[in-house]
Image 1 (cartoon, rainbow, N blue to C red):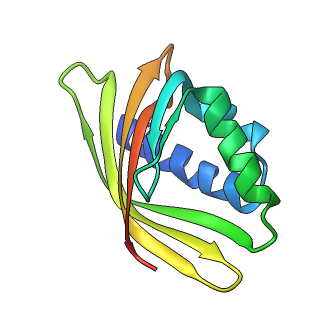
Image 2 (cartoon, rainbow, N blue to C red; image 1 turned 135 degrees about the vertical axis):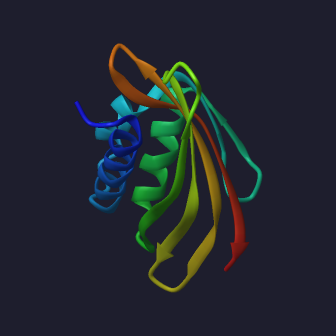
Length: 125
């Protein structure tokens, strides 16, 4: 079994690939049902279904290309059941790029890491 840090980094890379492929429904297993997401402009998205709907709406935008999240750090709690991931993100559109920082809280549920909350801050674009 991979180390928790490696597992989280691998799951993040996989979500990047699914977003680039515009496959909203395949993102479901990466989020907890009660996920909280604060988007780059400060908006709030509550719950798994709302997060998947938001991705699907983005994917329907013909100018949207992808979001790339680049993990910089992963820190674990003492029990090894929660983790904080931080890094940089880029939103790629046909005519623009947005950039910023993010923080994600992960929880290990039955041996699988899933996102319980994410905070994105737009800093450029």
